[in-house]
Image (cartoon, rainbow, N blue to C red; front, side, top):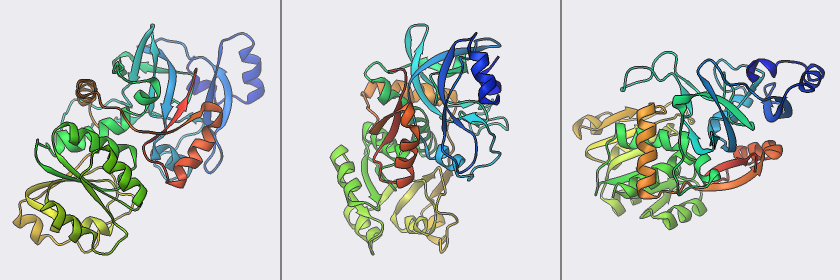
Length: 345
């Protein structure tokens, strides 16, 4: 019986059930605006095309936080959150494709597509059941913690930057809101492609860290005139990668070179006001929405990361037992890189 059914049992039934079955620890999302609960639940059994991966490390995403706050569609409880995971399967080190049922089209996901970690159980547990196709060899140069930081962020950045915007060597790239996992992966992927990368952030410290990673320059978007200074420093951009939307998005039009592509994979700041279309159509600028990525893109991303020995940035590591402290760290917004849970260490 799968754990996603068993976690609905009251605790006293679980306790009785576990007397006869192997148990594992998992962080259970039980209620909106309530702390995750560390529980002992039965180890899931393989079958029906699903295999069990023993998770060694998992990483948080803002999606997990938004779900606990009720800011996500079709919320289901109880459930194990977590989209990112690395671990072992049949004695081999593996990393998990963080979604299910992409569909047959390469241009867009199908109607059954969903991200791992609700409604299906996710990676905040000692084991997880997945389709065998979701289990791929882990890049050999990475630790479990580093590999856990890769899947969702790496895949989202890969599709936005490589598949959609088709960044080329020598192009100038602007990545907004650097410090988050996807933005940092976009920075690292763009540099590996030979692009010249600039960044924005609301934190001078994060800008300095991004420059230390290889960004050429950065501007604080809270400061007046940040866009004009970036234009003067760079001469304009061929690719812009954004996750926030909001009014700051309207500044991108003036930063674009002819033929530029703007890739965006989120909209946390809401709708865009005061966006002028004239410079966009006159410069032949493409606006390219992007969400996650296909299994093939995931395989391509893993191969690229291994060839270029890219190491995802890990902000901090918590134990599974301290998962709620990790969630607090994410809610605070001070992280630079991925927040990771160490499991089965």
